[in-house]
Amino acid sequence: MSDHVLVINAGSSSLKYSLIDGHTGEAAASGLVERIGESESRHIHHGPDGDAEKTRAIADHEDALRGALNAFEEHGPSLTGIDLAGVGHRVVHGGSQFGAPALIDDDLVAAVTDLVPLAPLHNPANLEGIEVARRLFPDLPQVAVFDTAFHQTLPEHAYTYAVPLAWRDDHGVRRYGFHGTSHAFVSQRAAQLLDKNPADVNVIVLHLGNGCSASAVQGGRSVETSMGLTPLEGLVMGTRSGDLDPAVPAYLTRELGFTTAEVDRQLNSSSGLKGLAGANDFREVSKLRAGGDAGAQLAFDVYCHRLRKYIGAYYAVLGTVDAIAFTAGVGEHSAEVRAAALAGLGRLGISIDAERNQSASTDARFISPDDSQVAVLVVPTNEEWQIARETLAVVSRSC
Image (cartoon, rainbow, N blue to C red; front, top):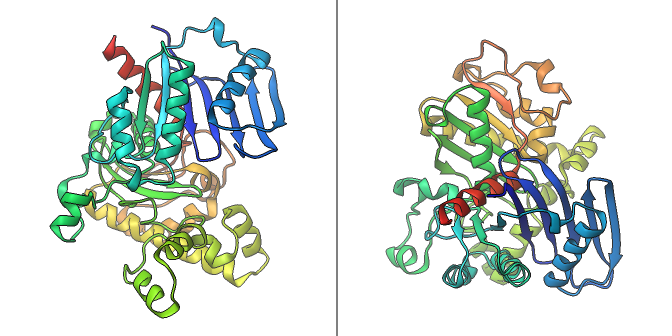
């Protein structure tokens, strides 16, 4: 069986794709189509001979994927010369039905469609990508890899909210967690760096990008995570508030006359770093902070305080911690966030080496002293590779 997988991540107005060797993680090519449905859509293809960019009207996801296939033929590598093992799709919400990646058939599509109320911004776009790929690759196995699947190992007491039984049983109100492919990849890579079996390692993973989430991984299994029914709960993010008193929406609707839709929109799109500092990109917040901006300083302090709270809480959940792993854009590149989040935790055996922390290396690495009780790691995430290797595993079992 071939090792190559075409990985597709379809968003509401975008489509990302990668051609990946599922065993080695090597990406032969990748690309991004943005502003689908607009008159000036942008398509950039990263191929073996460099980048190729094109601007044109792209009507829908089928037009976008056909453009991607044309880019493979024009700029390489040609898919006609590659024996693809299958197509792997990122699907955001798998509910409680999917605790593992699954081969796509009509029943799976129907099940994911039923889950749209839990992820109305994401699952419809994921389904669009699936349907388009099934039309264009009718003879290839297609696999759904769910963001929520890795967290289906949460114990009942961790995923259950203290809400009425009818909410839980009839409407699926519970903690699901997200960024599962990233947390799975990073926790496994952390075990490799420690030269241990994942089953013998406890890791706190901090995925810090525009979206942020933390997880406690015990022996390779997620036992706690910060995002909940939706990706809004937990850490402070680029535009999402993270944790807040659940009575806040009721207060705003009662006192200010906001609709529930408006409160939801503002908590997801106008809060977090954007609400505190006026910018959701952490690099911009850092520039503002360096210039003495008070809002940016407050944003940094709130962001790192929330991180430290979760680290302490997850340390308590795990009992013993072998490693703390930072990943994603902010986690991989912001030495100041890593230092601030771990400051004062020496009594827990957590410390960092200042010189190692400041390194500009893009490799997975230790940033803690050699004699540290808890290893502190920076681990670049690779969700596409995780999707590719999970796709290979499903395809090999179905053959």
